[in-house]
Length: 419
Length: 111
Image 1 (cartoon, rainbow over the protein chains, first blue to last red):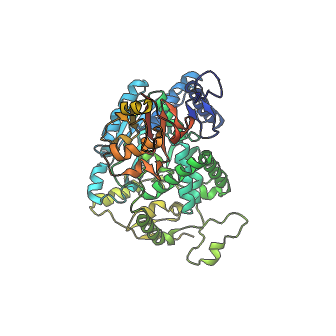
Image 2: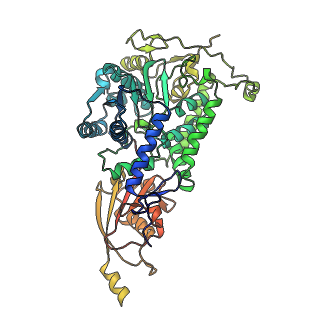
Image 3: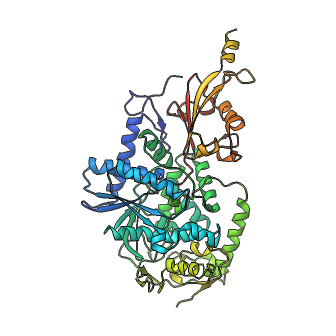
């Protein structure tokens, strides 16, 4: 079989079939196309302002390593005049994060970027290893997620930086769209599709420059550029539901490679149908609901696992049971001008009036919070009392993001009805 | 006979695993293998044969479904033959040649 030639230059041997359009490209043309498309995403969405200091959330994994490499390249090529810093979180997981942090340290040298590492131990007095020792392997992702979000913000704030970029890619977003669709969580779906998220819980902006980049292309880019990245799975409880969504997305990609970007676009279209006051975060200058705790999209925590065979149905059933428990806490979204059938039939579920978030400071740690005590402090209190499965009151503001509550296995949820 | 002598010689190739797949193969990234140049039915050794061969002979971990699902490489695992996407080379039907390099990269792990 004669080697297939590059569709753009016609002179070199093709090395990749691009999933989004089946175009066959050589290494050089692919690299240029990949970088240029990310540049176009950055420009089209005005992600950066000249002179801005930007922290790259760096885990040492493929996505954040590619993000750092591409941003460095583009910053020089197009004179963004960005001041780029690597920001890593040390969750305190031996045999996982300590190894990947070594990769980030090498990246800092390779890309000549300063590196800041923020540890859960210093910030919270607990490493994830200690948390898991206490609460077990189930449900610890909740702690890790709540802690990480605040840790990234605090890390950035400590550096005087107000913009954190993360390596979430198109596959991660498609996966999150599917998950939120499957659990009927439109507000979260809307937030996850947004390329920039601002949250009143933080004055730090988050953005996802790799939002439209296929994971396949990220991996091949890293391979071709011989980037130094780390691969391993978080050793603690993978999320079965995310794993299933991921498997579904990857299986769809095999049959119809454009499906991933199509799901991302569908997610964006659906997000536009979600009323602003429900979706929160995504739109500036609107009443914003808090996006606290778990990141809107969980792909970056490394628990996006591929292993999803045995016991998955059992896990799923369990999760569904948990969801039933949390049902009283659920909120229906009635789209403007439309009757929502579920409201009529199901008297358990009262449509609740949504409030503008009142932001204040956590009375314990002084961090921005919509509650008297921020979620991280509430979790910490449970840990410190040696009694993690405490009751946590969930207010209406949070009810638009029931995921956190649902995940907290064994927790009794007390919805607080506000009028 | 020409074909017989070829088959006796074997087919030396290099197989590499990355992106976490190496964990399934004795945590070793690079493996030098010698495959028979014809399969049991007398057909030239192709990628389908290699994938089966790796599961049967080289995998040190019981979690076969991390690598293969429904008799094919699991969706989310990229395959490069001599550094080119195997989609360019006919995937399972690609007939292996002497000193080919086959790389399996998992994209399924955290980043």
